[in-house]
Image 1 (cartoon, rainbow, N blue to C red):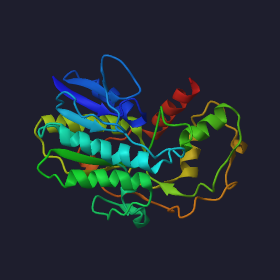
Image 2 (image 1 turned 180 degrees about the horizontal axis):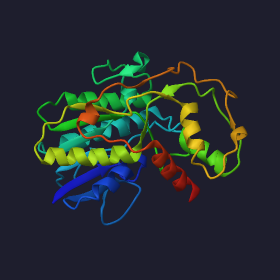
Image 3 (image 1 turned 135 degrees about the vertical axis):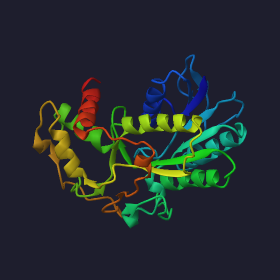
Image 4 (image 1 turned 120 degrees about the vertical axis):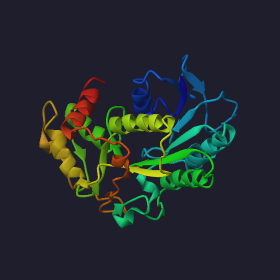
Length: 290
């Protein structure tokens, strides 16, 4: 049995990784959390870490702070995204395989087309603190680790302030919402697909396959928010276009017009995307049942 610890395993990304891992009988899955309790929970608080945990064969760091608009505490971002994980990384066995869930925002997104070779010049506290942890892992080449950098993930359990649940809940509750122009182009990827792929990376490591130190995860194409919204409108139970007030608010200052994953490395290592209509329908169903 392979013992796997998922930091942030109750969060948006981590919970989907946990779901995917639990589909495999060879994994004993543990959740690192300071908020939850249960027989499979390891109490870990990355803001006040006391690194005295049992041995794990694999640690997946899906914890993060700063991607939600209300998460603005710089010190907390640094603590959760870098200090806590780096202390934990130092405390686990050298043989432990560490998967770091980073972000496409670690790059200089002004380049537009981003690959693993794109310079890392993050512009946000979230991106900077995630990159510092990536740099820390890369400074230990003798240790077994991989940094995965997903782009704009969406799906069930995402925070309601993010664009996809924001649009869905507007329609479900018949609530008008002011939006920017929606012409910004991003790389949207279904979080469930990322979870399944990360579980596959663990299997590849156990099988002894060589894995690159950094892998981007995205759809490989840019899509405007409005284009994604059109797809979303087709799977909503009832759609009222006037509720989405495009152009009612200005774009955020210094926001990049376009960036996306231009690398095929994740696909070469088994990443498969769900049909967007199916993944959007699954997302709508989740929020419709809340």
